[in-house]
Length: 289
Length: 137
Image 1 (tube, chains in turn brown, yellow):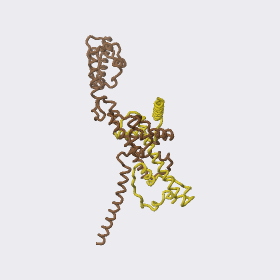
Image 2 (cartoon, chains in turn orange, blue):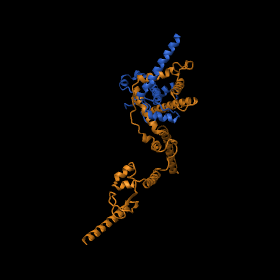
Image 3 (cartoon, chains in turn cyan, green):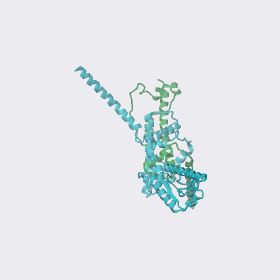
Image 4 (cartoon, one colour):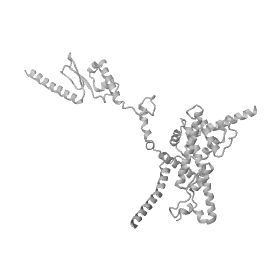
């Protein structure tokens, strides 16, 4: 019984410890691993820089986190208020007056500002002291550029993949739509079909007869696609003479042969070479005779 | 007439000052980076292609943080000044400026933000002491 009680006590104490530990862990998670962790970390660095410029040497973690959260809330409230002002004026894009109105609202909460009473009597919104204070702040404080480089790819992993898609796709398709299946194969197919038509319709075959090298073909096609094409077609002058350059022996009946693969071309060329050898042998024999 | 001219002149001055300020924002780089501000702006529905407005928002936020921080600094200095009266020179030498929750909550209360934090942690023997004297031990 004693042992059981002791074990029960131990387990209870262990549970108690867990209970004690768990809230701490939760609080750490909520403060440090907030949903927008990356942006929070960046804001924290910026806030820490501002605090350092004001004269602080050290900080408590919790105090810095709190100030960061408050600064983020300030920024978001300002932005939301400005967006609401612009929406109320039937606009989607905000302008300087919306931001000024939002600033006025925020500063009115914080205890007022100079010129707030005469704000709505005169039509000039920009006369109030808020913007003047801001400009004084800009002129009086030194620039403190952000300390660390911002890694965009790391932070915006999902957004980083979208720009190449948006470059590919036409403009009338909204960005939030998923990516199309790959268009590359179809385009190549179209081009190949088109080129075959061109190949047959256009009369560059006689042009090639004179001494059409690969470079000449490239120039005729505008320098596209010759490297990518696997299909090659060339002519054989009646099975008599074919050079690698495309010089074709003169003969009335020409056959056009298309070989899809390089292997086929190779075997074909080998056949031709064999035929040529046989012809030479025949010629030699006839000469000998 | 005269009064009207003066007011129009004043308006012109205001406009000139404002446009100067906006133009100076193009060259001024706030501590809060543009990308971060644009992220938060987009998150809360603010659309604007103008960089100057994002910088204006950044500057406003930076000013807010700086004001809160300077308030907290004043609180900190005042508290340490009270300590110096008691313990004198030893404290004055290593007078450290630390941003604490105590000062920050006082500074934020002036902005209308009520920060509640646990006042006392007893997880280490030096916790209850003053942060300035904590470093000595």
